[in-house]
Length: 217
Image 1 (cartoon, rainbow, N blue to C red):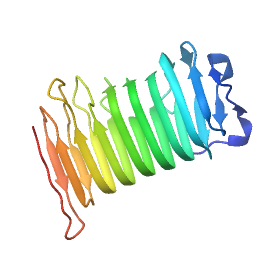
Image 2 (cartoon, rainbow, N blue to C red):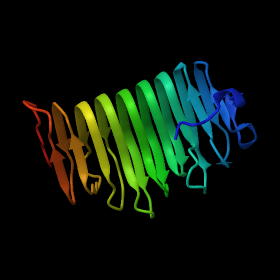
Image 3 (cartoon, one colour):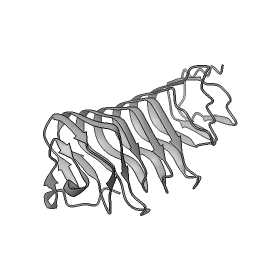
């Protein structure tokens, strides 16, 4: 997933269009996606930087190829992705991130997974829609200090897998229908799940003396 040559990519302009991708962001700033973007390979790569905001303004980055990743984040801090629509193989992939916020985002018809993250210190996912007719994983997170998922919305069952993480809080308002299938949470110390209409819920705890709590509403 992370085999790419960062040196081959041009720097993203502050206004990102189909003509400017694939591109990389290595400097702080507010980057705006302009119009619908069809990504043939990578879309936007955020690399070795901090304090970056991707403002989608309800535009889309779309890929029809299984291996493609519209947004990739690597070795960065304080990254926010908001107000964007994504489709692809894996829509958002990240590794070695301090803080990642995904807000008001629609992730649909991904081929492999919606969000895949590894070694992310804190993840905040808020007001996100995840749907895929291909039945792939919705959210996969490994090695995090804290994961907060609020107001996640879907109209089909999705899978959520969170492993090797210190703290997890999954909650949503009672007005949303949340369908979680095979929610698997492994090796945790503090877990809260406050959701509605869970189809199937499973917690596997391997770590001794953990303080896991599950609340369903």
